[in-house]
Length: 425
Image (tube, rainbow, N blue to C red; front, top):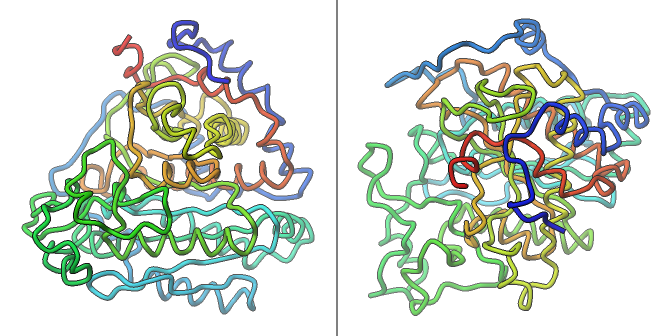
């Protein structure tokens, strides 16, 4: 049950956060029980050793982002991972974008519990792609019995780049005109454009969708002219090939396994937010976490039509991520500068993928890493990638051991924010 905000201290003290973290079975201890290892790259180890946070936040007008994996490189890397794994990792084409680029889904493990992860649904948010590549490489190549045990309990399905058309332009939205949409769905002729379709984006004069508004909890939904243009609090319309490919992958796994236990959506946020409260009060946040934004009283208005909604499960999974990162690196590490993402009680985005899947009974977690690539370029890449990777691995381990189901979801609210709740109150 969610604790009412008026009873919570929004400027969490170090003591309170420590208590929250210790309510869970430590993810590192769980990893030891399974024998899984949260790998720290040399770059990340250097970041950890560096200790203190910089005193200011520097952004660039047009930073270089050429060092991040692009779509062609991702395809080659996934093929190599599949080949090297000798069939342990299976890579499929789940769909194609309007411009014809592949949307890959990589699967590893045979366990009954399913974790599905998507990244780069906004094209200028790239950290998750790199984190998923690292996870797939290790799970595909590790030969120890402990990894085998993990993969016997969990099936991971990773879609590392679900908006490659937008990624090629280093912008948020995809590339798709309204005329192309109507050509595919002629029943929409004469209808107004969907509210989340834009004629340009990030200074680039090409139309496209904010793909993370294009989902509907009715996974069989077919676009109807009478539903357009819709509004921000409405479900989306599955108008893009990217959102349909994600939906189809989700449905495929649910059909095969009976359910998709957890879904993670990897994103980026603004570049200069600072933590309010907790052991890193005043320091730049690294990763913020969230459960689905479905309005007041934990989405009460949706419960009659969507009775499988379980907001506390999503909070348990988000807390498992935060606990795992803190236990891996220590509460004072920049890698562990985690907090709660913007979530006023009335925030309602039914058209986001995490919301649509939560309404179908999946526990969903949003990762928001500080700074898009058009803000920071490649700066602090190693730290951000490692934090995301450890967070994803922590939830995978928590699902395998059951520790993710035993934490207290209310303790999620003891994590600090970055000023938004204190200001709102």
